[in-house]
Length: 355
Image 1: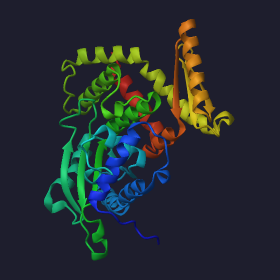
Image 2: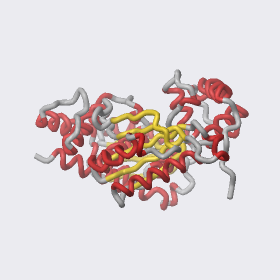
Image 3: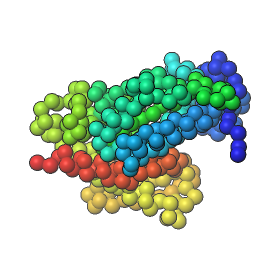
Image 4: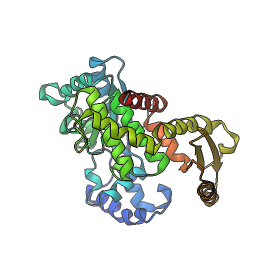
């Protein structure tokens, strides 16, 4: 059995390596971690050293989740190198050694009541395993984020039960607890972020999309009997009226359905097999989508510019987006139930908008 990776550098070295790479990364440099020297080696070592604590927390989460609900879905992931660097660019005052979600696991349960029961197994000191010193809890169900996100986050600190595991003491792991509706919401935000390349996942991007998700967060909160998102209408009729208008203006249903179709077909098509970039062209009026793969970013950019120009001249309802293939693969890894999740979101939207 392979040895677990241990931290080999001091936290001061880790933070310096990250700080020195952030300006380079922020300027849009595209490179593999192996091409950027010792700084990347230090960051990669710190990132991957979270694997053993992450497994410990995920196994514990699975045991607890099954005590609440046998069919709970439990998953884990190490934050990718690119995601680590992007987060440091967005949050320049953060130190890498203090990042709480380098390792993360989540449980998805059928409803809020089940989430609350599982959350209760983490809050009481008599219920904690020795390896799970809970540092912080964030209840985004009782206090939803302004972007509509809801769920519970628990940050734990690893503490070894046996001497040989002491090198991992102090590693932080984030645990996310969500209902199925809350998870469908999060999956859809990831989807729109991936396909539009808008930073909606991080609370930024166009006002219309941000408002749509805030309103949808409140619509789902009302359905689950929890707190509404701040800044959205408290009158249900007004909430649904505004949500309906934005759903139509943004063509939410058409886009989500088309992107789901594209994800299903692109791995099997000959013209996308060796692609690095995918050009997706949605004809809103005909409700059809065409997917073309490109190995060269420049040619792909020229193709989308030509389509956008022809759409303007011909006044066509075409929605063209260029997507990096790796981002789609990452989306699938992060959300293995992707197809079901987006379908559930559309069904929840339809339910919310029923007269």
